[in-house]
Image 1 (cartoon, rainbow, N blue to C red):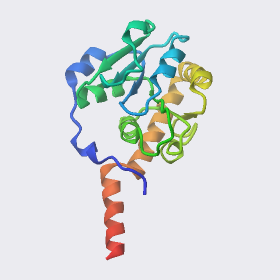
Image 2: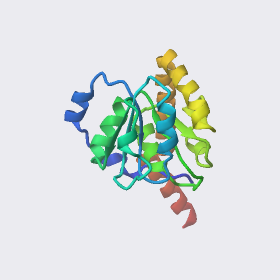
Image 3: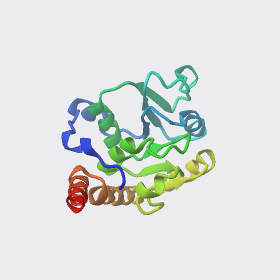
Image 4: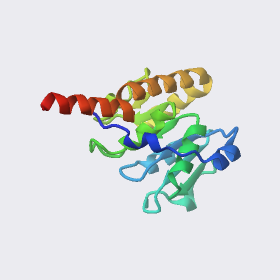
Length: 192
């Protein structure tokens, strides 16, 4: 059984942040553990598009002193503000460093719950949650492949919306609180 999104029933909306961000034009990456922000920042340094990263103050591989002008880093923001940034983004990126299995899944499920196109690095968990070019993009080499994916999104924003919606549908069918609760109940009843 895959991981589910148990917190989805408690989502709060940060209307103030969302109002300030209307018309924002950026890509988003967030989370604390096992993120390859250094490669992501380096990749965006060669792009025109903007990137917003929300991470922990403990993420030492993100150096605000040397950020390119198109990259913004915020640290330790409340969950509702994190979700507001997710909702306003063009697409969300999950740049995992190592193949550890569960790392990044709760963040990925937040992206999918909000109907965002997800771009993930090719790790063992990715195929369960993102089907390449059906419900998102799976990249093997971020620095080489991400610029082409970004170019495709910029050239065809409708495709980004369609892939994000496909991801939300996959989320509702497999990972949302209601679906996971029913699956768990069926499993437990079957074991009784």
